[in-house]
Length: 373
Image (cartoon, rainbow, N blue to C red; front, side, top):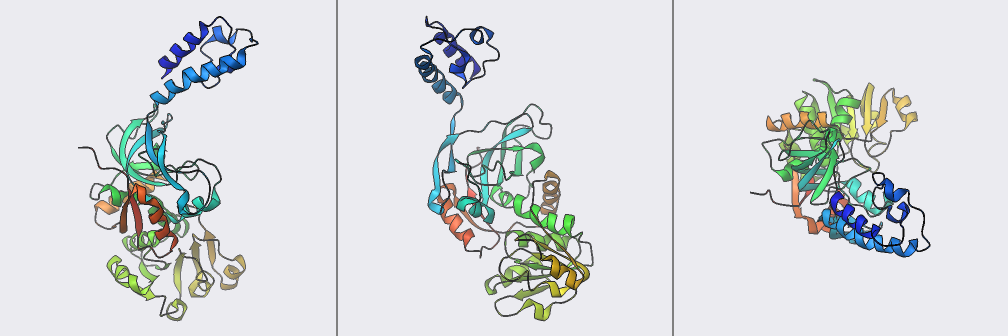
């Protein structure tokens, strides 16, 4: 691209009128002192127009477009547009991933509805794919590596044919599962790990109550807790009682027929992964000295003090070390990602409608591409 822009600039320079560097602020002029030192011209506005006409098509040609889901304004599922978008370029510490699959998360719905007003925006924080390009300081990966990643909240970009991420936010994909199941892992599993291990300090022999055990975060939390040797109690609807048993829950509870506070007491940890009044009803089932971790809003300090327990909210963040640990557990057969639906990228609005129902079993995944043969 640089060579093409140089040619365009030198062609413009041959025009008798003189250019000022501001006319070409679309490209870096620091390496062109001859142009920078030239005086301003009365006809600079017309030459700016000529410069843009000459340079921008060349720059666009050097950056091939990709297909992506782009949001131009907040709103309902209808604002998710399937269209061409510029292919991102990795910085020194980043990798460019050719995305095979991307998962849909509840936070994606909140973002689409107005949590972020920075547009245009490509949503999506879970991807699995193949490394296409690496930045100059990347040491963990090489082109062709199969990876999965938790993209940062600030950048996102997973609903696309290509996405960039810092190398410290990605890990080699588990070898025992496909890209669709791998894409279901990063955000939800990282959230569950940070809640149970990092915040609650879960250890073998403890008892943990997981609200929403059949959901994205909950299904991973159940399996992480079981892998750590904990006793697991979990809530879910009637339709998902079979999944709780499949995941190894010791005491499954159907919240549509049973109040958990009537059958549960003295647990070490509560992980609240649902909304509604569940958190408010959980304080009394935790033993003194126990802890509540809530991913849907912080616990009430007054209630924590009343019951002699601790509590915290959680805002998850990318961590490649957790993804590496998850890959080991998945390949060892101790954790299985639960994927209830795989949809093509163009059906993203349907995927968002399903997630917004708050009754998704495991994860919904968008299939972006087939692995090249």
